[in-house]
Length: 619
Image (cartoon, rainbow, N blue to C red; front, top):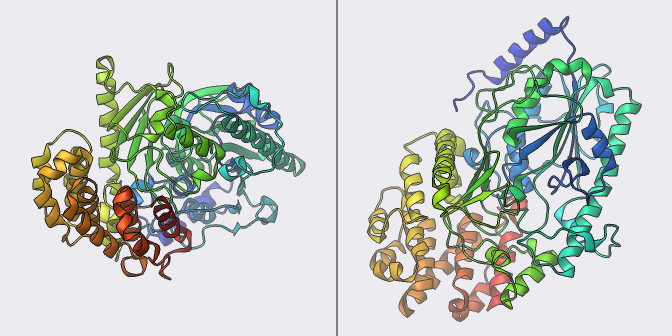
């Protein structure tokens, strides 16, 4: 979407004149957001009889409940990045877990617009954005942040982020269960074991604790006499912290509870279907939250924001789809896009050669993950339970009415061919509209944006020939082109196209790699480290003895973080891990690799050590 044509100073001036004009107009609402971590719609108000959430159920009884709310990202940092910017991280280069990039000049985080409009902004306490701050974002962002610290009479926007439901708290021991694990509903994709039941029950225990904390914040609002002046939102930051929910852009990983209470004096800002205790089927997602917040405050959402306000003066018509994404999750790379309407979820896997359940060290601290993988290795799982540990099809489609656990893939069903085509087109249309830069390898996102920003790179065909790169990704990850097409693309002038060509041959397996051996061998000398990594993994996995030996040398040249940077190092180490026992001859050299470089942002520093430890342990 186009840049806003207002400079920050001009925007502030426009707002200032607007504030004068509103002085005698209708009052502006205070706005309170209560958020929690890693929580799907597992509340009594959503019909979950196992949940014990009396405070939030009472809030729902006087609010509008959104049945179809999505997080866009199934993990915290990119989810919060979506909210703070009002933009898809896939357009700003910030989709990868705990990466760090920046917005173009003139694009501000939404609290900046609220502050310029006279609001006091308080964030208690988590930020976790993949974007650098755009000036002063909050009046106060700390564990002491509170609406009570504003000037007298000043309207406020206040967030309280409740963390007791985080994934890490599911596995905290010792813990005496309150919810009976015998009554847990185990989803079809999880094995029914004591460990899985315990983790699910503890997840619900934590939700009950969070409910009490949310109730205390609401009581403070009442005690301060502000309840009738304040619009209240409650939502989770993505789906549950259980494996295959968190980190995966299924409905199970993206659907969140969303409750919105609008006091009677501000009903002019409510949608037509608003009513205490009512439920709405409107599709909303995190990219819509910033424009909605500004709309409620009477501030026109800037043109660069990619979501649609669903409340307030600038509310937009309902959109037909919600969109999700998955990029690098901690130390593991992947590229997935998802779409949902009111019934179906469509998944597009651009790296189908990778398994769903890649080994992420943090995820494997959860007992349910450990027992699930062990039972897979022992051959004791059902087909639905095995799938998480297997490679992916290029496309998936699930009917949420008939299959809420999303285990029966309908992508190949003749009866659903038109639905697949429609949702595939929706996903491609969004990628074009926002100029999805996620089709670039992560190191190239940063290299191409060295003197600007990923967003600007994405909108510059001379630096990012989007159509050509996206077409290469589409063909590489499906059967749309044969080996000859991939080999031809290995000579493309753009390194991202060459990268996808090498991945396409890797995805097609041993025969394709053997037939294209010479072209891949030449790619081991490519100017782009990402192309070299992809070619080395292909030849290392499926080539002959000489190919394996040379590939190992290429990957060991690229793996040192102090020489190549974090993103090239991560890619090379992932490829070394994929070679499995073939990397045994270089085990000691892998063990000796540097763990840090002194330049990597602290948010990413644990990833290289984790990978080195995992590779060495496996050898």
